Image 1 (cartoon, each protein chain N blue to C red):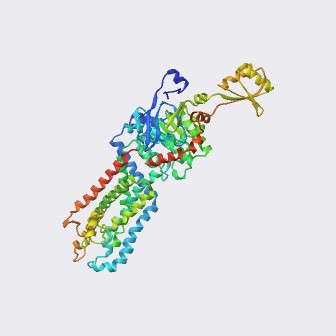
Image 2 (cartoon, rainbow over the protein chains, first blue to last red):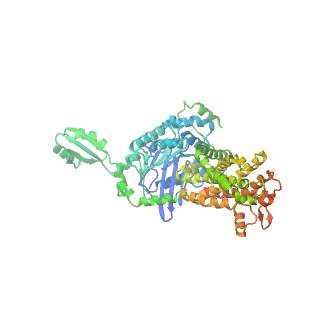
Image 3 (cartoon, each protein chain N blue to C red):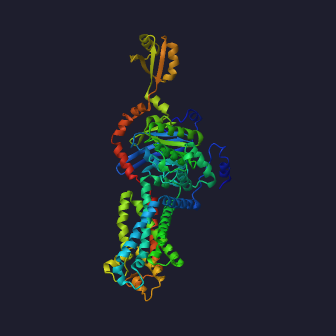
Length: 341
Length: 297
C-alpha cells in the first residue's frame, strides 16, 4: 500500500497534500482476534474519505482508535496533528463523532442534548445560540428543537447526531455507518445533508460504510477486508482499475457493426438481447470515436461503469454480501462485546 | 471569551459558518463539565415524577405500617411518651435516600447500554469531572427525595426544629453522596443493567437492616454487633438518631439506651469520626470510579 493515491486532480498536480489523519502500521488485537492488521493511510484536509468493507472488517475498531476510544496494540494514528494515544484531549477537541448506534439522551429535548454537548466541549456561550440554530437548520430540525428526542424517528435522530457532531466546529467529522438501519429514502436524505455540510463547513469527513452505493459519495475510498486495506483510491480510479466499461449499442445493421468493431478498433463484440455489446476502457471517451469511425448508423448507445461491487469482488474474490454472511459476523459481535464500554 | 467569537455570533446571518474555538482544557472547562453532568441529573429527575413517588413508597410503608404495627410490641421497651415510629424515623429517613442514590448511578449503566455514555466519554474533559458531576447530581436528587420525607417528620412526632432540620439535611447529603459514589463505582464495572439492578437490590436491604435503623445498637449478639460495625450506613444512622433524640423532650428519658454511641470494642466512636468514615468512604469510592473510567480498552 502506498500513500497517498490521488486525492483530487488539482491537489495531485500541486503536490499539495495536507494530511489531517495519518495512520501507520496500526494493529489492534482483541485476545486471539486481530481486528486490524497493520494498516497505513492518510486523509487530506477537506477530503471525504470512506472506509468500505463488510461488517467485522475492522472499520469501527479503526474509528475507535482514531477517536481515542481504544488503544492500538501497535502502530500509530494522528488526527489534526495530535497523537490519538498520547494527546487524547487535543484529538477530542478537534473531532466530531456520529456513532453507528445512537448516542442521544432520549429523555432530553433536542436543544438540551446540544446544550449538554456544548458544555462538555466548552463552546463559548456567546457563540452557542447562533451555532445551535445554524446546525439545527442545516439538518432541518430547528422547528423541533424543544421536542423530546424520544419522539423523533430514526432518521431525525441521526440528523440530530450529525448536528451535534458539528456543534463545536470540529476539524474532522467521523461518521461510523451514518445510514445503517435506515430506510432507503431516509438514507438518501442523510446523504443530502452530508453533502450540504461539505459545502457549508470547513470539515474533513471520515466515514465507514458497507453500502457500495454510498461509497460513491467519497473523494477517496479504502477497501478494508479482514483488518487489511486491500485497495485505496478514488471511486473512479478503483473502478477503472477493475477493467473496462460495458458498452451496448443498437445499430441499423448489427452484423456489419460487429465486423467494423473488430476491423477498426480491434474489439470483439457479441449480440445479446437485441443489442451489440462489448467492453472497452474509458467507455465515455470512446463513444465520440465510435460515432465518427464505425461507419454503421447507431440508433442508441449506453455506457455502464463497473460498480464498486465489481471492485470489491476483484480485490477480495467475493461480493460484500458473501463477506458479510461468513464468519466475520461472529467476530464483529465478539469485538463489540469486548469493546462494550 | 474572545472578540472573534462575539463578532461571529453577531454576524451569524452573514457568515457561512460560525467559527467556534473549543478552548484548551482547564479548571474552568472541567467545572463546566461537572455542572452540566449535575444539571442533567436534575433535569432527568424533574421529568421523572413517577420515580420520585415510587421511591417514597417503601420508607412510608416502613414508617407507618411497620412502625404502627409493631408499636404495641415495641412500646414496652420505650420510655413513656416515645413512640416506636419516632425511634425508627431517623433510620427510615436514611432509607428514603438509599434507593434514589444508588438508582441514580444505575443511569450510567443505562447510558452505556443506550450509547449516551460514549458521547460523554469521548468529550475533551477529564473523566474525573464527569464522575464528580455524576456523584454530586445523584447526591442532590437523593437529598431532595430525603427532604420530601423529612417533611413528614411531624407524623412521627419529630419536631420541626430548624437546627435539627439543618443537621439532618447535611447528614442526608453526606449519605447520598457516599451511596451514589458506591453506585458509580459499581457501574464502572458492571455493564449489564439487569445485573446492576439485581446486585444493588441484593445489597440495599442488608445495608439497611444491619445499620441499626430498626433497633438500638446495644445488647446485640456478637455476630450481629460485628456486622453492624462493618455496615457503613451504621455510621450515619447513629449520628442522625442522636440528632433527633437530642431535640426530643421526654421526661426521664435515657438517651444512651435507645441511641447509644457506636462502639469499637468498648470505645465510643465520636460523632465526627463516624461522619468522617462515611465521607472518606464516599471520596475513596469516587476515586476508584474515576480510575475505572479513565481506563481505555
